[in-house]
Amino acid sequence: MPITLLAQPDIEPSGAPRPLIDRYGRHITYLRVSVTDRCDFRCTYCMAEDMQFLPRRDLLSFEEIDSIVSAFVARGVRKVRLTGGEPLVRRDFMALVERIGGHFGAGLEELTLTTNGSQLRRHAQGLARAGVRRINVSLDTLDEERFAAITRRGRMADVMDGIDAADVAGLKIKINMVAMRGVNEDEIEPMMRWAHGRGFGLTLIEGMPLGEVGIDRVESYLPLRKLREQLGRRFTLERADHRTGGPARYDWVKETGGLLGFITPMSHNFCESCNRVRLTATGQLYMCLGQEDMVDLRAAVREGGPQGLDAALDRAMMLKPKGHDFVLDRTDTGPALERHMSVTGG
Ligand code: SAM
Ligand code: SF4
Figure 1 (cartoon, rainbow, N blue to C red):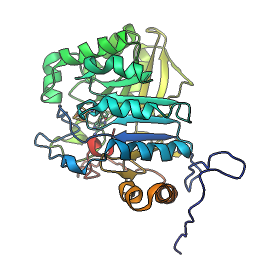
Figure 2: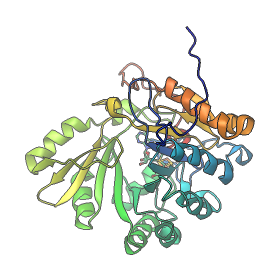
Figure 3: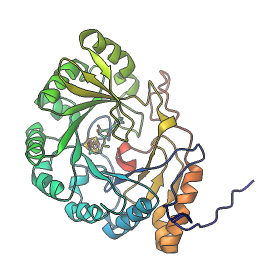
Figure 4: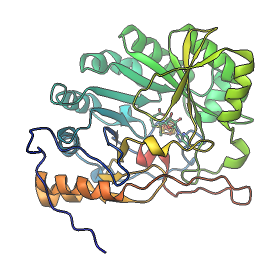
């Protein structure tokens, strides 16, 4: 039976904003926005060497991004993460951050960013001024040669420089490391000691089969559940209540005094508590990183204005799937989804 959706006002009769709740009762309070699919790196697990990018004219304008963010904030979204591709390569990026920062006080509680760090030195102070308090910086190795091999064109010194600048600007830093068998698994402990030694959190991520990138995902897959068990024999890991609104589960590491997070989409499905949706740089709203269901918010805003947008958010809630179904199959090493992480926004 088709589901009929009626456009409802943003405000319930009680005066409270009408929240975004999906069919499974999950509250959506977290929006990730990919501001560009482009990047100055070509990390082996994320992109193909000869990645084709979208024409710039297809990207949402800052006005459009802002009106979509406003619609979400009006419906109870409290956290926005800017990502990509590499968000800092989008021209005039700071103007967007300042604009979105304008929603603080109107319901937005946190504005944050995931970056590869290459351009961070230039932007660190501006980010802090615009109200950004925490950032995630992706760093998979502390070895310069490995760094060059993984990113295919990055310079580790730039990233380190960016991290230093962010630290000086007072931004709280979390390092994201995609843990890969045969690539950087021997660096997990050194990375943790380095990150915790500098007062940064470290989150380990399982590689996901998103987009054709020319590497064997099965070969490099490192189950983090097992890794946590192994680390637990060498360190005292205490489950932390700490939640950042994202999918990571955290431990305090007694010996280092730092937080260690695990994002385990493959070895432990965390979809039951998912509170996120993702906007692509061209305005498609994906309700799940690992599924195809989407709503075209650009069309909604262009054709229906604020009301059309609001109704599209209701449609999206009806479409949010129960979860992803990533499996790594030894006989099929290709991607589970054609869409790269850089398109949906990591
Ligand atoms: N360019 C920025 C960066 O690298 O931080 C933001 C976008 S990137 C797509 C966001 C995060 O996704 C990064 O931490 C990256 O390591 C991770 N990532 C990219 N492709 C992935 C994949 N196939 N599986 C798991 N994590 C991935
Ligand atoms: Fe670029 Fe981030 Fe993907 Fe690396 S992980 S290629 S830095 S978007």
